Length: 83
Image (tube, rainbow, N blue to C red; front, top):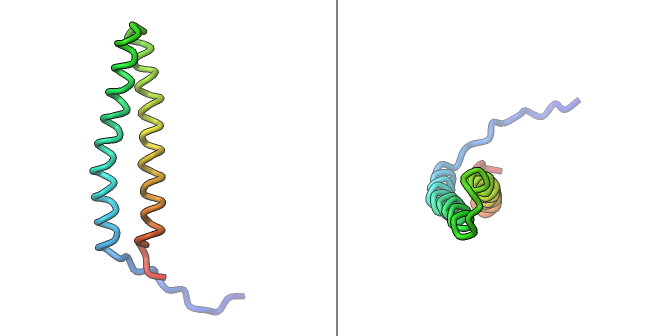
């Protein structure tokens, strides 16, 4: 058995606030760009409203994936918890 006491990890608040603030800023830009790009492509090619929604969903999910990747990589550089 493991008799070592378990320590609660201490949150490093400046790192967490910095990364989350950057993620919010970057997220608004990425999601806005993804949705406007999908709208513009659908309008340019006359694809209709339903296909525009599908493109917006696909591009929006891709934008969310970019934001998640950013947060994961940023947490490696500025860890949220003490080690």
